[in-house]
Image (tube, rainbow, N blue to C red; front, side, top):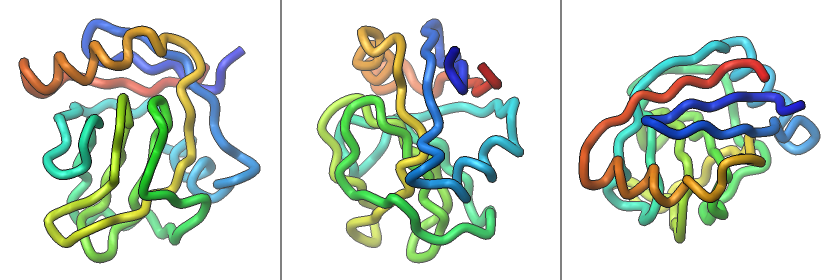
Amino acid sequence: MSDVLITAGPYRFTARFEDELAPKTCAKFRSLLPYSERIIHVRWSGEACWIPLGELDLGLGYENHTSYPAPGQILLYPGGISETEILLAYGGVQFASKMGQLAGNHFMTITGGMENLAALGKLTLWSGAQSIVFAQG
C-alpha cells in the first residue's frame, strides 16, 4: 500500500513518504492531508511543476535537501531566500528561483504512474494550472 495517492489533472499517481531521510517534513505534510491545490509549470527550474505557497511558514528547516531532484521526486522548499513551495520533478531539474539556486527537502517519491509524469508536465506547460490532490493512501 502506498503512503499517498496523488490526483493531478487527469492523472493518478501513488507515492511514498521518505520518513527516514526527511522525518519532520513528512510529519508536517501528513498533518495537511488531504491537501488540495493547483500546480503550475516552473519558471526557472527546468522540467517540473510547482505549488507556490508564498510566505507560509511551516516551521521547517532543511533535511534531505537537494537542488537536483530526479523525475518523480517531490521537494518542499521551506522558504527563506524565496517563497515556500512544493516542487514535483518530471524531467531534468536544477531547482532555482529568480534569487538563484535553491535546495528543497526531498520528502516524497512517486512510486506508481511514472509513465504519466512527463504528460502531466507537458499538459501543465501548454494548458496551464492543473488541480492536484494529495490524500492518504
